[in-house]
Length: 398
Image 1 (cartoon, one colour):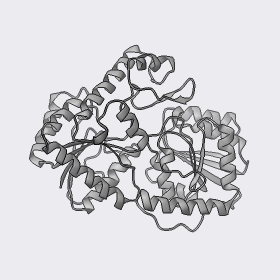
Image 2 (tube, one colour):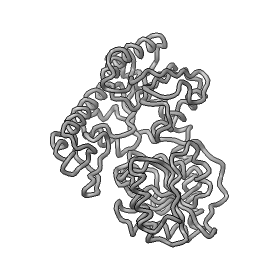
Image 3 (cartoon, one colour):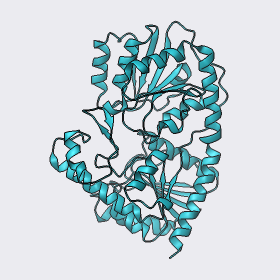
Image 4 (cartoon, helix red, strand yellow):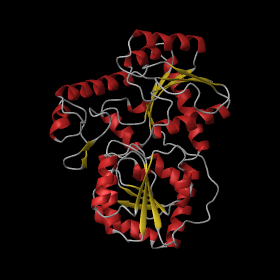
């Protein structure tokens, strides 16, 4: 099959790009011919036979203009895709042009039916937004707030963009939501339920792990992700201050709130127990030395791919019960769920896991089994090809 992937960037900026890289490598091994078109990034960043990478500057942006659009359409005409798999792009003009020529499948990595760019989180009340997209979003963008900017035009632009996204992707031959949480939101926004498929992320299977460093003098917990208020790193720091004083924390990632989190760590007297390691292309060494992964997301995570990465390594997880996280974390079996914002509860859950080495290993083994059964490459690729064929048939049908 000839597959054209349309994405924002080829840099490994987050979970979306990590998933796409793995998907490209798997599809290459399955013998598909691939064209990956991105708005930015290195010309050939990932492995795979029969894969062509094409960077068309700004082609993912709403204001890209005719030249990037025409470049993509011209290359698509030469490539003749059986299907276009669109990831994170807001170039709706290009999407509509492609959808008129080829079966187009939209992959919803985030909930695009949201004026704040998928970030369904009210910062003032520290709670998730469950509103249906509508004019009231313009008020909540500032009053709650969920939007990041002080300029009122930003709310209007965000709202219009979300409405345009819903309208554009409603005409796609199919849609993929990376969790049931996202699927329900898209259907509530008016997307056709019969064409919105849930497909969880996958990660490569790992060799069985023998155990975790729970018996050392400094038992280490791990945070992997962007450092933003809605990701909850400050909740984790406050929980660490309440947890056992022999625990250490490594924060792997970067973000606009990194300096604020570093300052909070100093104020809490945690400087000698917290390492801010920055963004790392290779996170494997940090997973290997950790006893536990913590995912303290306050906003409703669309999925949370770091969780199944930890499970693949037989690492137990403590996480807030937000968004799609309960779809992969089996509470009490593969880890522990805590209600969002419950910092004392988060501290207790961390203490309970690391103070019970045998229980932690049992959770880790159960997590690894669950990942191999539900979040491994084989079932993912099988279901994805079924969705591809449904989208192609939908495009061909009147």
